[in-house]
Length: 169
Image (cartoon, rainbow, N blue to C red; front, top):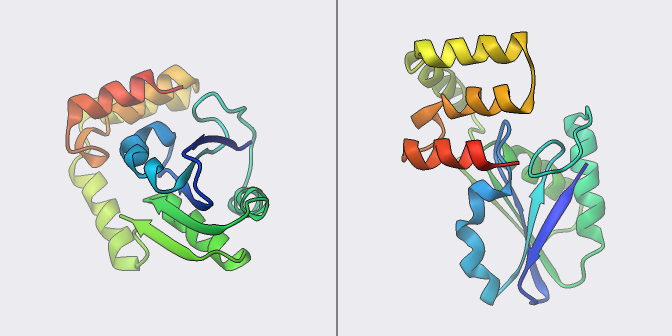
């Protein structure tokens, strides 16, 4: 359900949780350069980056991360990107961590509504068709195609984003 990739050997840990849906830790690997000062724990949630997919709920995911975090010695920080920020904030309430970092997490109703409005405004025929294809034929391949059609809803660099999604496991 949870896979971690660890970089660095510091006793100060940062657990990194990617956004979603469908984004693995590969989408936030720009933090690799922090491994010279911190031990980085890139967490992949069920179904991403070759982890086994199983139906799970928000609470279960948070409890798995809490359990993982409690096994670490030293200072512990948790960083969540986008939807990962919701998970990170919940885990920070469940366990004793030294800090919480949330990047681009739409915590307010206004922010969530703005994200929904952005999705609606930027819907393309390709995005709608790929969503319908995934609904009719749910698979890793059709899900990747659907996510890659999000274009600048997910990534500023559309070509980079599409390639990242298509290559991600």
